[in-house]
Image 1 (cartoon, rainbow, N blue to C red):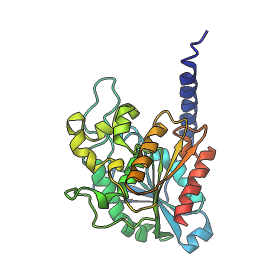
Image 2: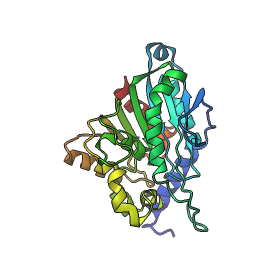
Image 3: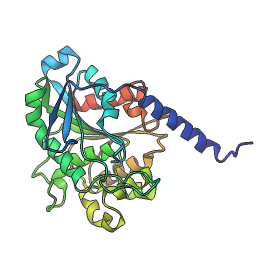
Length: 300
């Protein structure tokens, strides 16, 4: 007979695997345009023209996508292109940002690749957002950059929250802005939004700690990268989280929301029942439509 105590974990793992398989089953969707924001091969942005003619005629809201993948090398922007196309078909203009996300340090034999590059990952996100207005004017005239919403999934959710918080970075941070970025808002999907809680729960194999360069650098670099320490931002922020997410548990999003409240800022937190990590970016899942509506509420 199966162990009753282990059964729920096995069932949750099976459902998570099925959700991931569904999300990755869609063929990649090529962009309408691609533009570089730097010299490195990963410093590019794919652009998707809004498919709804009325939205394009009026100037479509711009969704800036930051993909997830635990900041690790195997995951690039291609896996989120079906979601980018899904949003374009709903009338959004979409900018799908690539960035340096895999460590140049080889992983030990049999280990997962080391997460992120410090400071390259943050250099790239800052540079991409800074270059975006000019690139949009050049290659995506259908977009209205005055209605920009930054959207990120998982590790990309951390980067989306961080991109909206650059004006509250420490004064010596090279990415700091003098004032808030011109954003309508942020929608962070199952974000790695609180590094202390993420490390305690060993989210994605301790990816947040790896992103910061390991234990010896964690405390020094955390104030420059941890969204839970970069509050309040004054920018409308919504988190969408599956209640049954075993990759980035809801406790991480809840910790960020609590930190925001303590800082005097209310953020939206939408918890979806019977939803795990990947339905949020899976066009075949009902949760994906919920995400699109959350974006629309900020953008339109």
